[in-house]
Length: 458
Image 1: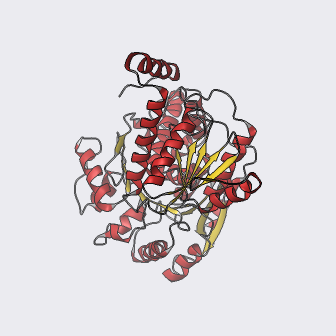
Image 2: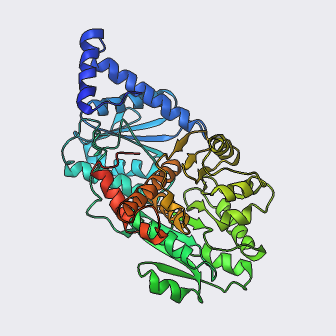
């Protein structure tokens, strides 16, 4: 694959026209048809395109043209397509123009009913701040996405507002609130491992989640409240209480939470395993749009590994983050290496078998998703070989999931930022002596350095 700049892409398009007769119209037709093919192939893995509602936001340039071509093919294949032309502020539904006086009312209806919103507003050519009316339109997309996790937003070329050369995006909206960036619930920690909940929760907050809530016992609450001032709390019955009481206390507070982390520091045993199983049962029963996205790490995995066919107990779209020892237990005692190449095929095959997004930690961490796609983080840092760093990573994953990032991308970004933060620490103290808590203040800096183009893009 050749990666080009925006200027180089324009030059290639000019040459395609002059040397091969591939006009912008032909390129647009090919691009729109290919984008529609890819989208439909993805949708068809889980459902039919027929009768799905698509709202396409159409910009004034070539990106908008791509969107119009996509709409034509989606309609041909049975989709219900609405086109909103941003510049003209005109809406067409199923090929019929909506009267101007009814446009805003009908557009709002389409926002509320669409299964997919396609962003074909601006493509690679954007190099200036977005107009206020376009920001407002994108803000409405964001609001609807916050209300409905089932809504899928798909960008043609790249999301509107992203600089194609640098990867920079518009800053967080000025009208944001903590709900904009998602609420995270964590069931972590125990008297023997109190630091796990603090590290994971702090990781979620440092990566940008809007609200972090720790589900802890009344006995443990003062410890966390004194160390983690920004957190909120769900108070659970003591560890010796009935498992149903403990699981119900958490489940009754899950409304409105976008993501949930189970496992770090919970300990192992029949009692906590029963709590985990009851939570999983209730999560599986929830509608997709209401279910918080789940991450299981550490003792969450250790408790499950004692069960036959444990993966059948997981809700859809679960992320698991085992280190080699935990992975071995999940695989019935298989010896899993910490850094050899046999891990790659193991991660890929188990992600497919278990239907999870799998983060297999190690010197070079592997991220695999159920369809077989994998990513490898080649930037190893031995400073991370210390207690608690995995808790921070789990917190990064669950914090990114709360911000509506796709599981595979959230896991990949979390692994990258985790290593990037460790490199910032090592630059100051070397590769020995890093504590897991040292990573926390460096996570926002690692994100900022992505904007500054120091680390590049994932």
